[in-house]
Length: 116
Image (cartoon, rainbow, N blue to C red; front, side):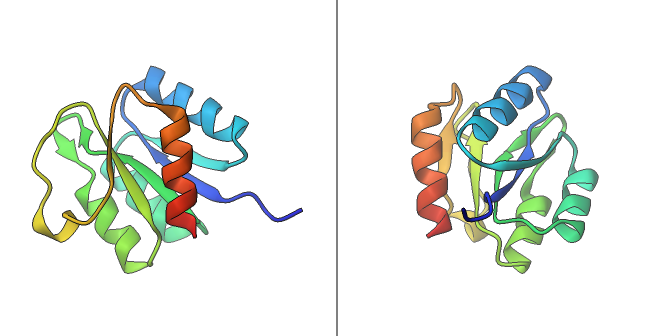
């Protein structure tokens, strides 16, 4: 059996984070995190071997774009989650953004497509 893909979960809402972790683990991912702030997120990107990541765009007063930049630098694919339709910086215009409330079947399909 192949190793499970290692997914970083970046989400600042504890209930959504718990739900994401449980759903992704049930769907065969090895979850790293969750983390809810920028610095720990970047730390995980730098220290962990990751296959993919799912990033909540809004982390309280901050955003997850610095984590996304760290992932891009390491060539780790990622998907954004958003509770609102805010503007993405041009450098991320090609990134997938999925809306909350999360459709877990769609999330799983999207993650698997990104991993290919």
